[in-house]
Length: 470
Image 1 (cartoon, rainbow, N blue to C red):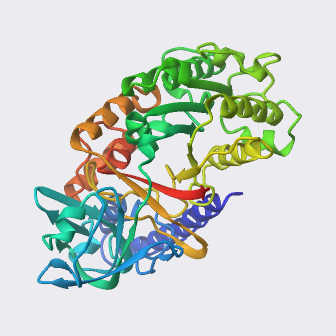
Image 2 (cartoon, rainbow, N blue to C red):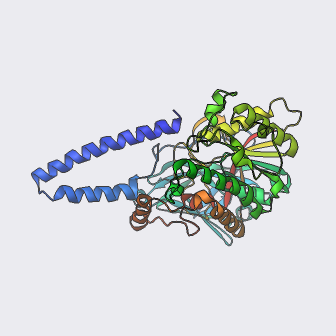
């Protein structure tokens, strides 16, 4: 069982205990006060749960984030004067530097009911970076893209439903412009490359998109059209295979650089456990991956037998790596992103690189999911991305941030809108919860699309982590 599954199991157990206690108290109120009081309390408790307690937050908002940023960061003394962030000495910052500011954020009482945010204003730019309700601890603002305002002393910080105290150092990293290199994005599923790195790969001098699985499971949307479960899963896999080839064309990536490997969703860990053993699809009644590889621009080793094995996956990846020879590989972060296919995708690429005569210059990690907080990145679409919750400083986490213009954000949103998996309507329960949160908690859904990933992924930043560099 993964760490996230353990946290979710504990969260549900605690919720059941709280529900049982609440039920006993309501029954007592009905006996001692009035018969109708439990009904009123039940409705109120349900509304409060949907508005303020439905988030999957598996830590206390009073916990400090614990990061080890390594020894490559430049530490810049700054101070906060009447809301203005003032460097202690003149700054010389390059436009693309990654800037991170540690702040102590303390929620006001309203910040327990409305999402606390810090407004970051500089020149014509206004950003709002969100945090957990009831926050009271060390957090990290992302000031990347605001070098001019910071250097000129014009950067303003203002807490909304929270107060801030500045930490003594601003952290800055200067990196190569990875957009000027050959980039390969590894996507466990169609849409992972767009969620994490559309802005990067759409601006890269040369880009490759390699998708590992067809993402064919959980095809209820297609079953509702009248298809049998296996046929629905096959149709969903074919559509997502098409998406993985076609959608990057919107960003100018040539079809010859888009590859779908067609392995089966949520089966990579079983393949890894028995590298020579084929692992069939959970739902599509398939044990041959070639149905989902028909749009590929060139043959690959596993086309010979179509077997879904770990060894075939490694052979495919080695062939692609040697063919593309990317300077930069972008893949899921092995400790931040808990999805089992994402963990295995990273492991497969790193294993495939072992022993090759060629090696990439840089490996960047991304996180489309988190262990501890399903709502991260917090805040609204179009806002900046504050650093995620981390509570284990045993390994170095070195950020690299790419800033996106508003036009680039809209292009990214349209790319996500083309993805079939992000098009179906949310379940009624989730739509109702969103309406309650909008009414009672002031949360505004994204105007770009109904799926939650439009809020999470279409931001003024794309955040990556340096995993390896030569």
